[in-house]
Length: 481
Image (cartoon, rainbow, N blue to C red; front, top):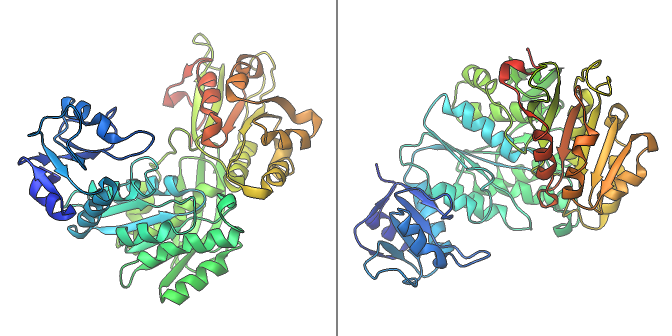
């Protein structure tokens, strides 16, 4: 079954189709392109037109271009438009318009992608569900996600992000959600905003894209909840609130049990019990909000609560794995929490709280005392407060229950210097230098967290931890709940 025919794509974009073709998918990257995809020649670090010949050679069904690229036959399957990004946006709008899917859009300073993945799993149990890939949430990621949406989609989950003011509203209007969720508002991208209230106002602009009678699912526990409330009231939008201080989806009790979060809540006055296969209050909050979204979309809440128990975080976003250090001795393991994809003060605080609550194992390994160990990298885009915000990490209550904190980068040096001397590990300028120390730093029984902004490359540290052994099978992991 085709996603777009030449005629449909030409009508959507106002472009000129060369040849009578049909495509089954859409790609912007020749490294991952699949046979039958429409290759979109976007301009980024390099001009995508340079890769059209390669894309067609690898089996692309057609290419979206502004002109006939060098090395491409004149009769090659093409869609020629005035502007490639503009045409992708047109395809996105057309993709959204031709489906009867119930759509939810998610934004927030922390937890967008995790909540999107929760909803993908939850809604996928109740209907044909389409969702953003990875963190495709920007000016090309949102239209790409919409353009990829099959016509028979029943539920769609669209993630929307931002770096600067004015980015969210146009993308929300393109997605036209029936439900919009704001996970939280925190000090992220502060270099582009005057204060956190400004970030909240930008996040609240997602409500401008809601369909008539649409619903907002909003975090009641944040300091800027009043900003979100005012935005909803100004637009005449019905808001449903989630959190410990909420009236609609109320977080009543959280139990962290090894690698599981058990949540007792109420949903619009009815009791609600669910669990998430990862420890952390932030997962409880995101899960509660996700279930609120599912119910607002018309999904069955009881089935949704069952389905969310199957979700687990993925690589770089809080995924936990047990590393077997000695194939001859099953006891010799350590636990890795891979949260290396990104960081801001709120998400780092949540990750450190998870580490502080983790169960270590004693009486094994060289040290014979299990330790909680953190590898922390710089948090970027925090503006004039960046030094103070890094220093403040050292004063978090969770630091008391963490044994060693290693720091990477010039900004995280401020945290390192503010830490109690007994908790200071190493400080290095780069993750590569830190990774070289891993074998001497860790031992069986430890629980290890890696967290930092993506550009800091904490994935190197994660890889070094993994190379100490091999990932243990699921039935060997500590979580027995």
